[in-house]
Image (cartoon, rainbow, N blue to C red; front, side):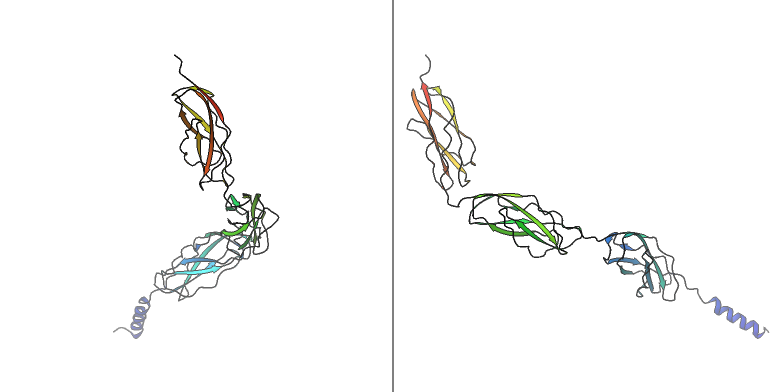
Length: 323
């Protein structure tokens, strides 16, 4: 019969051999998140951690600046935990994560994740875009212009226009960087005006003025007839029943499109041509059925049906064909 000691030893051996050892958590994934930021800006980082015994886990991150986070809240094995941090100084940092299970076993540190932190020295906003708007207009009428500007620090900003006449707009409401701002203005005198813009950030720093947009203001908005066209130019002599071409061009005080008509000096006129922009040369052709001297002239009509006076005349001598 075995002794009591042998029986107890065997029993204890069974108990000891039936207990499993707690395994350390798996090494977490490297933190995932921001790769570049600025001093004082809070940056989030995600870490995935798991445990071979499927125990709940906690994680922490070494921020590589002498500071390590507290252990996170406990979460399920295989899930993701997010930890935030704001670096107090600029530099290049390699952060890594570590896991701990609910029984206190600790993993190795993970591979590192690189983060570049830059100084937050404030600089003025960038040069605003050239104002976009009308190129021409009339006195006592109002026109809109739009601009935008960026900011290296990501600051919000105000924008202001210079209307090119010694007058500037008020500062706009504060807007996020790169947001379009539109303002309107009217001029009381005709002339050519250089419209520009500048930006001021929320800390008070002001950009230079932008490149200019040229705005031409015409005396009034009353439609007026086109100017007298150029005297037609073409051949001075020709022959009966042969076709000859003549050119002219003209302008319009309102900048309207214009059409031309020729008087061929024989009691016959051309049809009105197609509308063209001012200062565009237009050519028309004609033939004469009898010999003689013909006075050729032209006139213009704008899109409002206002007609100019006739131009000076071009003398064309038509001869009978040679025998």
